[in-house]
Image 1 (cartoon, helix red, strand yellow):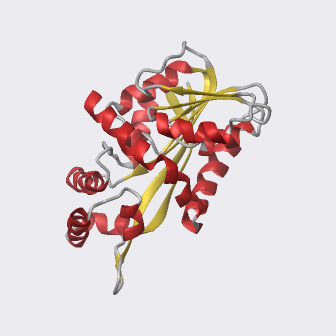
Image 2 (cartoon, rainbow, N blue to C red):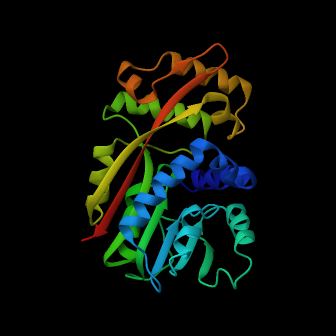
Length: 262
C-alpha cells in the first residue's frame, strides 16, 4: 500500500511541470469548465468558508474557489505538484487564504467537522483504499457539508472493468482502480453522503497525446494499441475507438458528483 502511494507521488512529481499544459488545449478547457461549473455552482462556496481540496495538484479547483473568498487548504501527496502551485500563489496579498500541505487523503490530518466543503478531482482512482478516503472526507466535513467530486468511471461488468483498469495501469502505473457509476454512487452514499447531482460525460483523446503525457515507452504503446484492438464488446460504447491512417482516437467517461454529508 505504501509502495503504491510512493508510485503515485513519483508519477505525479515527474508530470508536475507540464501538468497544466493539457488544460490549455480545447479538450482540456472543455473538461475543466464542465467540471468546475457544475461543482462550484451547486456547492456555492462563499466568503469565510473552509474548503479542503484533496489531490489539489496544480490548483485547478483551489484557485477558482479562492475567488469566492473562501479559505482553501490544498493537500497532495506530491511535493512537486505543490511546489508548482506554490509558485502560482506566492503573492500572499492576492492569495491570503490559501494553505498547502503534503498529506495522505486516506489519513487526513484534520479534526472532525473542520470544513464546510471538500473537493476531490480525478484522484480517487489512485487511492489504494478509496472507501477509507471517502470516509475521511465525511469525517472532516461539517453537517451538512458539501462534497464536490469527479472521477473516471467504467462499465458495470466485472471482467470488462478489469480489462479497462489493466489498460489504464499499463499507461499509468499509479492508477489503482476505476469503478462503475452505480458502484461509485454506492461507495459515496455508504460513506455518509446524500447525492444531489450526477452527470457523466465522454471525453475523447488522441492516443499519442494521451500516452506521451505519461512518458509511455514505444513498446508499451504497442501493447496498449493491441489491447484497444481486442477490447471486450461491452467496452466498445465506452471507448468508442476511432482509427485513422495515422492514429487512434478513443473516449473515456468522467462522472461529476455533488453530495452532502447526511
